[in-house]
Length: 399
Image 1 (spheres, one colour):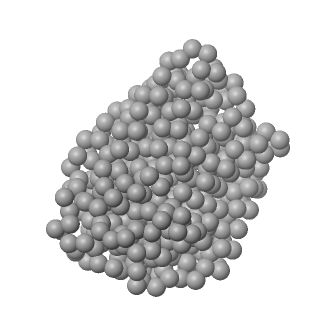
Image 2 (spheres, one colour):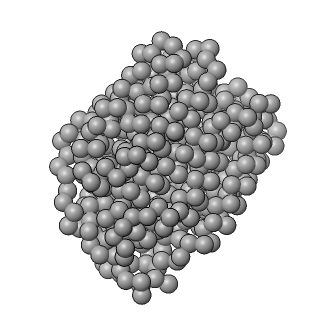
Image 3 (cartoon, one colour):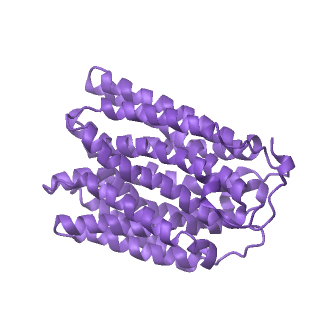
């Protein structure tokens, strides 16, 4: 296994993830307005629709991690891409259905399918890239995988703004279907790594090992969820017209930090990077909540993206270092399940708070959770590289 990290080696997986998340970014940017303005439901229902995807992701994580470890990461990725195609078809059926209630039910089903898809796509792509480059580059792999995800969201959000000028959800659904087909075509080119030998720990045991960094990720993710789920409604509430650009600002800041500083968790350890990242993210959430004008809100969204950018690889490095090499897929699935839990539980709560008080209170919730995540990071003990640096299997173990 080559010890040098070269982006070209993992580029096909990165591109597959990117194209999928362009579709995800386009749809999630439109769905809150679609559910609120077109279907006539309140913020709590908006939160439930957004959260439904992450509930499905949470439930699918064990199966996705097991697929990576026992069947190989390419198979996991391809299963996810097929589910992503089905979700796009579900979006299209929702747009074409008659009646607000039927549209909503079909939309939720599509979001549940998308949750299964994203769980397999992200876990499979991460597993494949770590196998392809070696575990010593896991932080960089997670950083570039995140670039693909949030870069896709940053591109998809303004694309959705252009496509949905007429108020129709249907064009965005078609884009999601086409991008799923592109992702499937790319995944065929990936070399098929087989399962890794060895005795695997039960998933619940692996989950306990990654619980502390996972909880830090959960708390840091609440602010991101508040932006993704409610920033368009927040901007509309304040009479501002640039809600789509707030999502793009988050995404572009996220990607920029990872491009220039993505190697920091591998170099300095996850704990130090997580602390500084959470300080920046909490500043962004404070600007969103306390800011009195559109510029401050846009700056808050960008700072939130810049801060959240390295939280996933920073805590993720600490999570992967806690398990043996044959359990890395399960470890990544268990770790990322905390991200799903943040969206599945906190976003509906944010919707309830928005209905009870005002839409801006979701960023107060994001701020408090980010500060709690910072507390966890300051108390976390960095792990040594011993289990993390175990050699990858030889090429003879690939299919």
